[in-house]
Length: 265
Image: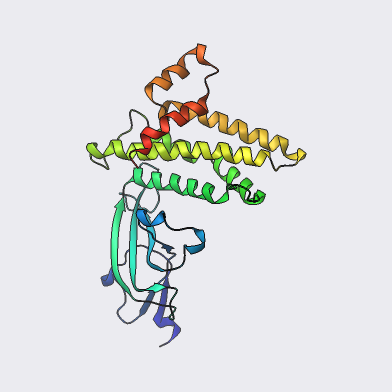
C-alpha cells in the first residue's frame, strides 16, 4: 500500500461506513481515560489509576443542531465506554475491544460532570496533612477557577440550570430534581474548594503576592454573592435578603445546606 491509501481520523465522532472509500485504510485516533464504576472509585488512588484497567472512556460533544459545540443548555455529550479483552498493562501494547457501551449525557449532566472534574482537580492539588504544597499547581488551579474571566463558566452553568425559571426539555420532570441537586452539590463543593485553596495559598505566598491574593479573594466573594440565590435554600436566601443579616456567615450557611444535596448523589 502507498501512503495515499491510509488516512488518520483525529476525531471521536461516529463514522458512516457508507461515506468511506472502500479502497482506503482508515485509522481513527482519539484520547481515552481509564474508566471506573462509582463503587470502584472508593478503593482506588492516583498510584493505581492506570493499573489493572480493562475499561476506557472517551467523550464526543454534540448539539441537537449538528454542531459539536454550543451554549451550556444545548451541549450534549456521548460517553463511549470500551472494554478490552485483557487488563492493562499487558504483554501486548494493543488489545482488542470486546464491548462498547454508549451513553448520551444531557446538558445538565454534562455541566455536572464538568463541575465534578474541577472538584477532582482540587482533591489532587490541595495539600493533605503534612504534604508539601505544590504552589505552582495550586495557583494555576486558583487562577483557572476564580480568575475574573474564567469563573463566568461556573456562573453561567449555575444560572442556566439552577434558576427557578430554568427550562428542562432534555430530561423528564421526575428526574430533574435529582439532576439539579447533584449539580447544586458539586457547585457548593466548588465554592468550598476555592475557599480552601485560597487559605492554602495564603500560607505559602511571599509578600509581593499579597495583591494577587486579595484579588482572588475578592473574585470569590463576588462569585458567592452572584450564585447565592441559586444554591441556597429558601430560608437562607431570606436571611441573605434581610439587611439586618448583612454579617451572616455565608460559608457556614453553605455547609449546612450541602448535606441535603449530597443525599441525591
